[in-house]
Length: 196
Length: 364
Image (spheres, rainbow over the protein chains, first blue to last red):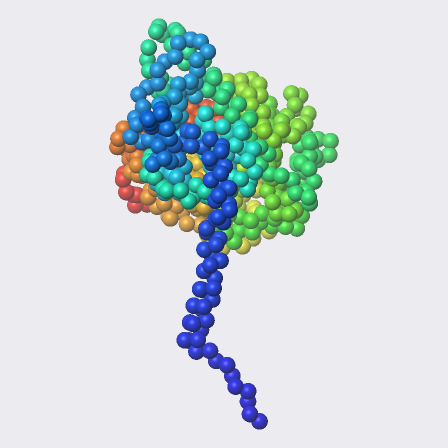
């Protein structure tokens, strides 16, 4: 009686098989990390139509008046623009002042500076997860657990976005050019206003 | 501008700021956790959550276990009582000693009182489906029962004995802000907090009741299984070079560690203030590496250029202490849950910082 041949895979064969398996798995892993193009496109559309650039992209003087400085798109209040104390408003209904860049706002809450939404790891949203982003918009607190997000950020409106839309916005923001720009921390009211 | 007008304007500004913050919170917060099909709605009354014997709101059921963590969370000076109830025949799995796994059906309660008046009782439940859900119940003026609070919480509940006569009932999103930022949603009920080796310098520490469960009792009663190290079964302890340091690290663990930890669920900043029962030396090293003489990212004009998160022997240059001292919404730490600072906790942390050297001292 002859014994059936035993299949003993050589180390070489195992290595080749493992390499093939790894190579086969790569597209799936890559697909998991890279958002689908239609999701990114949807996010780009939402960012463009929901006014994100209005405050998060600094205005600069242009031939026809102030225009968004797209070289600094969505990078928030410029680090280089150190704001003087906000002017003290006279008694009356005027409540808020804003910087010419439309990236700094002074009001009863103090001074708020718009955030760097680019995926820069040190100064932008580079280390934020999707959950951090969604929790921020849903709760009105940084990452759902930090300080309040300040006016004029329209959290009450944006908190109505669907989960899919928020994921689309987050996915798009991961694809834009990272810009190193450390936005100042907000100032409380006591520090915000010039003495009269 | 004369001082009186300036003062009035500032006070008005502070009121509006507070109003805006509350408005933002009320407008923005949404119910964090939808109910799933296999779950009953949350009971409308605390008396229906399984805490008390029938027709009582003072006597807890026989299988409800009281406990007292050694490092309590600062809650504007509120008096607190805590309970846990496990389903019959179940036990907590402590295979991961810093992230206990609680069986489905686990329920926990924390009661908050001011000057003897019960104000609210917070409730956490692990549902049969394994999901955690959170609620809070507001006591009526007579103390007869407590009613389920709205998911958006209640801002400015009048409570005469609370600071400034106001008390904020947290929104459900506030619950998850703290309870879902670390390896386990159950805070204050873990190996370190229930150690027999209690810290005599822990601020606001309560003496455990005679029937309270601690780590020893849980193991002895078969309610806690799979603790991996024999040493852990009795007296886990924070690694520290001095008694003051031990208490300060315990305070930071209880008040800050639920966000500032390395579980991956907290905030994406490097600062690590959580303590591990399994690896106390590593916890101490992580805190040093992330905070002591580390510049940190938070900067305002208030801070000197050489400020650090924790500046050894220089509390005035320590950003951590400054933010703990603040109760301005944009600056304060912790960012929610309190309106006034904790003088005892601040004094302890300041005392520790004054004693610090730049490198971790050898432990005795």
